[in-house]
Length: 563
Image 1 (cartoon, rainbow, N blue to C red):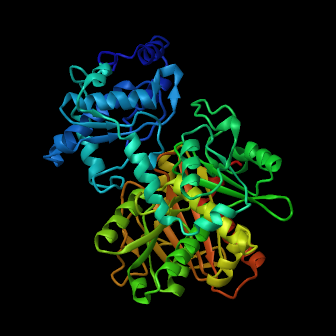
Image 2: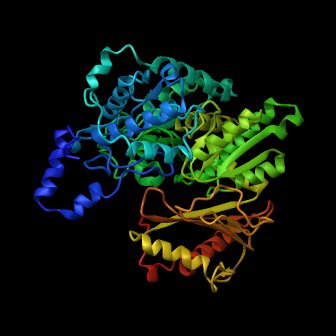
Image 3: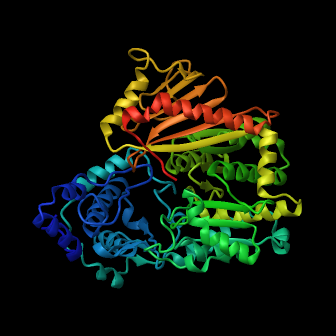
């Protein structure tokens, strides 16, 4: 590493660890290369082969370049697109922009044209594989192998100034910006209401890239611009005002948004994560309390809204047989209930938008209309122009939905209840345990597969009877005639779904990127059963049984998620 690395900051970090004889830290920096998880290669910025830094970016891009050359004979005609956000890490000298320039330099040195955005962009602006979706297997394995084979930096790898004078460097910023805001306008159905609405919105981009793009999206829909949280609207890689810059984590990230909304009399808060592909929404209730919608609740609202808009613009009842919605297998099944009642198709995919994006593209290529896809981790694909989660279009579509509902004197919370009244209540609860010992995790899942003797899964969980089992690690599915699961299986990650006789579903899975065992549970009630408190109590009891009998946190020394 030290021989090939030319970044003085990361080299100094490593030299100091060697001098101090700090084997533990060195193991952390050099234990293993970054691996493909649920979404691409991810790691913190820092020194060593386990982290994002100049050298690992050069090595990764070299491997990726060789893989693309092998797969596309016309690569030098087509080129690659590279974007960056505002993240940076002072102590190792890494930044998203620097990495983007090094990557661009790698491709240009091989005669490949590069479309490098000249300024920060949301993730969804950068298309992925040639089909516009994130890569899935076997590309991840092929790219990983090519990275292993191209470790030695090429002659001009470190000299990123070369790109500035290259004829192969292009800037797609203006054209993609124009096209994106034109494309999302196809999802604008109530321009007149948008122009007139008195509803006020607060938006926060949480020190990330979203501010400018959400402002432009509101303009594209003829909505008055949202009030931006001033302390958080400009990109800042230090994220000074929040402990953890992820709106998925709940109210802590929204403290400044609540204050601004109270000051300006805004009823609705829209919050993007730093790369603007996720969206959290909060609404002020009659009681004065703020309700933060879960990913599943917002998925229910957006699914209802997008279908309603489609239905009002497509009077042809036959067309509905070509309409699809998707969600990931750990997300709420509310779209399935809506699809059953309304007559369109619903499909579930594996966790992560790489699966939903690829499936959506397959369906669209067969002439189907994919209206919407979502995952409980506050990710929404509301616009078929982007085959990935997109927090910018989701924010403005949510604003139009809220403006429309306001003309009917309905809040988002009231409409959510109306959706559940019509299609059946879907109550969800998800959490995780932290476990740093892979052996314990393996043992826990082995125990579930050999619960009452060898190769037998649990028949009950406390007082709850198990009616079905799907194991996507082994490929077993008790509900299929041949007992084989339909969704792709992966031996390298653990994932078991239990269906219960009371209408409950629970999935346990390992995280691709963190030392966590996650669980997702849901109780689906048929329309007409509106005793929500009773349903919540039932789900709480099911979750308690799941934790006690299947996780066994005391025996396995698992650490609970702390709020």
